[in-house]
Image (cartoon, rainbow, N blue to C red; front, side, top):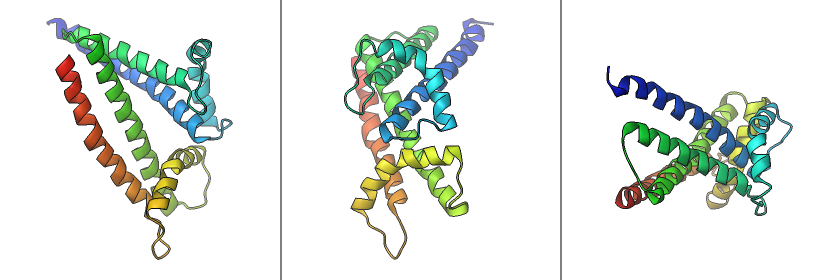
Length: 191
């Protein structure tokens, strides 16, 4: 029983707990940015669990229009802390600049994945259960609407069929393929 016997479960716990809390912060940020209903039960849950640290940070970090910069700073800070702890437990050392790039890359990947998931699930719900309301469906639709609106301008309906979801999913996948690898390469170069 080497050091991995204890370090692997600790790494798993750090990664899981930090990832879930960062997901809650990013979801709160995106829902606020998209103008989602803050009285939605799921939005209320996200607000309650992320409010204490954000309340503290908002004293020192102002918002920029619709952008809650304190939420972004908190998410990046927690991601950097989690990445540092995990790399430390694995015996890997990286500089602060590389850690910033690694953490930013993970947050960017998370945001893209959230949009992919919300658009995909919203499209499925519109096919199988159109017109039905559910708290999660309303939030997913509201979250995906800014991106879908841009895609509708680029590709209008053809024969009464809206291809904006397909276009958005293609563009998001392209963004992952074009943005994330250079950031990973940059982190390895400065690490």
